[in-house]
Image (cartoon, rainbow, N blue to C red; front, side):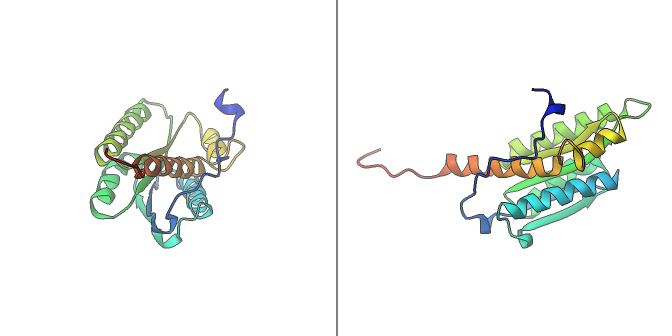
Length: 172
């Protein structure tokens, strides 16, 4: 199904165990702030809907999308969080700068997720136009910030499912 035909902000209502202990960071790039603020609001509200306590949601701001991986590394190194949601917006301009920024950020965040063993969610809008960014942050295609919060919750549920201890009878 084509992305433009589906609103991915709808979630499956899966729940976390010990949700009151879960801590999540939201790191937001300030470039295209009207877009990224909407993404942050969507992510924050969705985390609250899933039972994450507002005191357990760390919010960090950085100048632009390029700074997201470094800030993410700082948060993972200095804060006890179970997941990080990185939000930003890069809109195609007259040059190829967007390709370099998007690739660097995606690569950096992927590496941090793998190295840390914690979900690091890529929530950077990579659009051709401002209108597309609006559609993906507050418009007809939902809110990418909400989708990222749902992705973080689903990854934490997967992590809980994979690490739970099973009761066995007899010798292992």
